[in-house]
Image (cartoon, rainbow, N blue to C red; front, side, top):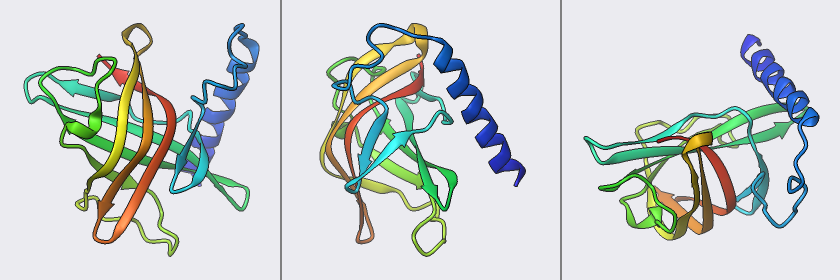
Length: 168
């Protein structure tokens, strides 16, 4: 219960702090950076997430798409952590789908069981293209174009734009 209270408190603090700040281009509906579609269902990107990164010595990196999944009035945060390999850090125009992309979801399945973290979903089709990098704000924006990740007869398909936390 403390875990849910903490998540709700952090979300409320973030929402209240953002309502005070206003920018002229915040209301542009064409950006689509606050929602993402997973398996045909639209989700709000969560204010709670993990910092992505790239490690120069191992040529490996990660980024996480965190979404709010509301059920019975309770918001659960679901995490979809992608890992990749590349000789450089992410640049605008890079397509993660060409970088040995793997997915480890941390979410509750419909039957209530949690996927074993050893089970990684592998790239099947689609794209995940870097459209913006912002080291000053520790952010990366990725455009998902029918990105399909598969494992053991199960699939996740991602569509939309997501601005995610990323350490450069």
